[in-house]
Image 1 (cartoon, rainbow, N blue to C red):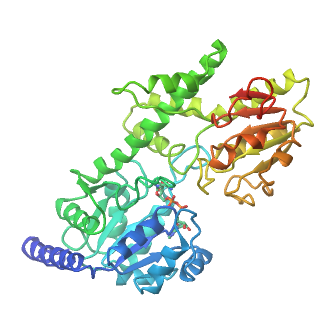
Image 2 (image 1 turned 120 degrees about the vertical axis):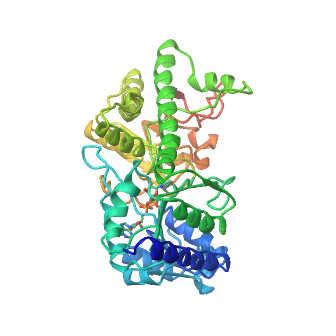
Image 3 (image 1 turned 180 degrees about the vertical axis):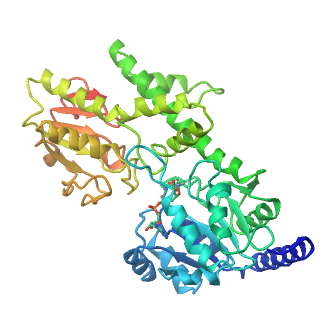
Amino acid sequence: MDGGGSSAESLATASRELLSRVQSRSARVGIVGQGYVGLPLALVFCEAGFPVIGFDVDPAKVESLRRGESFIRHISPERVARAAAGGKYEATTDFDRLADCDAVIICVPTPLGAHREPDNSYIHRTAEAIAKRLRRGQLVVLESTTYPGTTDEEVLPILRKSGLDTPADFLLAFSPEREDPGNDRFSTRTIPKIVGGVNPPSAEAAAALYGAALEKVVLVSSARVAESSKLLENIFRSVNIALVNELKMTFERMGIDVWEVIEAAKTKPFGFMPFYPGPGLGGHCIPLDPFYLAWKAAEFGTWTRFIELAGEVNTQMPRYVVQRLAQALNEESKAVRGARILVLGLAYKANIDDDRESPSYEIIELLQHAGAEVDYCDPFFPVARKGRKHDLAMASVPCSPEIFARYDAVLVATAHDAFRERELYRDVKLVVDTRNVVAPPAPRGGKGPRRLVKA
Ligand SMILES: NC(=O)c1ccc[n+]([C@@H]2O[C@H](COP(=O)([O-])OP(=O)(O)OC[C@H]3O[C@@H](n4cnc5c(N)ncnc54)[C@H](O)[C@@H]3O)[C@@H](O)[C@H]2O)c1
């Protein structure tokens, strides 16, 4: 490490050089992890004029990106092909290329372990890979969702193994990703970007980089605040979803339709924000991230009871849905064992091809364990993917009224637009709808299922 005077000088030089390269759009941006977060971010930097290298450990993904293909439905292959053909974007598994980058942004997974403990091993491995090639003047930004303190207490010590330090030699910040796949109103470029550095020069450099490619940067005082803000956003959603899920079960006992209650409540023009019940949480964020904070809180001798309670309510929803289905079948004098059941939707949310943590998997497995013959229909998943936790080895059945009519019950788990067509249910005996997408049968025997149960 440099002494005081020369350190200040080298910092000034390194920061100046980086800022000037950012301003001229010649700074090379490396993005580690080319998934749902890293790939759109890479494209946004390319489209803003920066040369970008996308790093990933998955050679198949890298090969397909090199061919200009997209594995994410809402990112068009033309966009990837345009970036690759323009010479601004290249995908690679060669981590030595990290040394070529002026800025390195980390977008790797942050899953939970078997006991709901945070698994930061992907972040650690990436930080080790960067530390081996770290050079003066580089900016490193962590984007993966994690508990407060990860950037300062885990990434920084790993980067220091290089013999370099911040801010004299390199810069380090945290900036949470707020990707919302399938959202037509907001995109990576237009969603405001929170940035917090481990020191002020790092914050400034990261803010300058994002400010050159995205519409709005929100600078906060530290990496810890930036890490915590992401968790607040996701905990807010998890707790409110748990609240409506609990109210759904309560109102159901009272014979009141929670969906109608929400529609009525949301006419209040202030102080209310609607959240909707469902068959359980899904996606890479809401079911996982809150537990990152719950785990870290224990280190400070404190409890996060709302997080635990919301987790408890939300994780029991797939079982609740299966129980409601069993009850509805029972009322038709039919057992779950031997019943033919069609589950609509593997995606965790409407009109996207992301099935991570989707409650549909648990619902299908619970029904299979109870002896039902289960199929699924999802136009976004012609074949069910093998995941870390599930391997259904199933293929989607076609989405048609003739196919739907073959089942004893149809269970709607995802609100894909394709499932809203009333005609689909014209000859279905029983529909259990967890998403309020199926119109009730018209009076006097019009089109629609014979019986509709909301669950
Ligand atoms: N998906 C979302 O909507 C979303 C939104 C906000 C934040 N996040 C957060 O962003 C982070 C990334 O999520 P994602 O959805 O992009 O995950 P993803 O699984 O889609 O992508 C991660 C990519 O990283 C690659 N990878 C794994 N280990 C690697 C390593 N050591 N080096 C390089 N690449 C590696 C994987 O092959 C994969 O392509 C997570 O922390 C997540 O919580 C995700």
